[in-house]
Image (cartoon, rainbow, N blue to C red):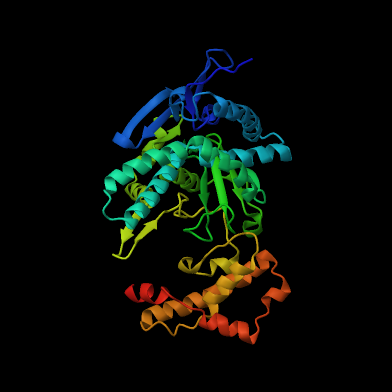
Amino acid sequence: MKKQITINQHYVPRFYMKPFAEVIRKNSNNEKALIAFYQFKDKIVKDKIPTTSICSKDYFYDKDGHIENKLADKETIWSRAISKFNKNEEVTEEEVQSVREFIIYQIVRTKVMLEYTQEMATVAIADSLFNISHNLDRDKIRNLVEERVNGEITPEFILELADALIPSIIDLDIIMIKNNTKIPFITSDVPIIVVNPLGVTEAGLEHIGEVIFFPISESKLILCYDSKVYGKIRDNIDEEDTIHTFNKYQYVSAGERILSLKSSNFLVYTEDEELNKIRNRFQLKTKTNTTCDGAGTFIAAKGRSINYYYDIPILKLPIQLRKIPEKYRKTFSRKYSRETRTFLLCQIYRQPDFITNDVIKKDWKDRQKYSKQLLRYFDYYWQTPKEDTVIGKDYMYKLRTVPVKMWKTEMEDN
């Protein structure tokens, strides 16, 4: 039998929004889930809005139903697994893997991610073409490229990447955290949050210290984390400030709107001036920017991962990492590679003989000192092969004299 084509296609599934909503006529053909939202544009607040009418767009994925139907089948499986977490029921490893799959698909499938990817590609290609020939009209190039890019980088294309990304989080542990406070978790149209307390400005899925979290109801949150760094994390939260912290990340991450059972839950965040400044900075950071120095165009495409703006108390870095100032902390892939270790060694041993500014030279020396501390931890984390820790005389000479190229100009100008 031919499946019916769904016109109104959700990029945040209804099953995910349902636990945050008021459900009326439950388990009937006329069941409705009513939710509240705050829309950043024009500061619109609405209560009791059907989840069928938000976080969706007509024919968002396709017009023939093949992607929408594939997602519907997956959502049935994801819904069962997440429901068991919500009910505190025992979950199987297969169900845990379903949650991992949901995480990756939900990261890539949002309207925000699609538009961000299209924008990044459009600016990159258009500015590259303009750099080849300044006789071309920049706006005309941009319009032509945008039309082509939007036709090529489609939701289907984005979703094809999801399966390839799932293995990147297979080694992360997953737990459900219970909210014991009277402050409810809120969510958004970009509910999956990826942060890294180790590398506060770096939040790649494969990085050491990675943390992924998303609420699954007003009282439950799923946390996916690098247990080799954080060890055992407590699964209950009694502190209201900690709940507010998780909610602030939803507020910063959101594209068009935040979601909750009642609009009154938004007030503490919408009126927080400092939080709104951070949100604005984050939204600006994700824009693709270009600069030109007369010789060429440089494209600065920022990822959409969130800086570690707010400390989450249940995530404690090991003492040896906490001793390193935040500005000198850095993270790398959880998978060991000689190339990565060599990069760190260059930072540690390269002599600052190319620096003439005393302030910058001191900063360089401090960076070298803390990089040594980082490397000691990373060698422990990676279980670095013993033979790779040996530095011979010739190798040390190369590390001390590795070509610097742009470092001098950039550092002296600062």
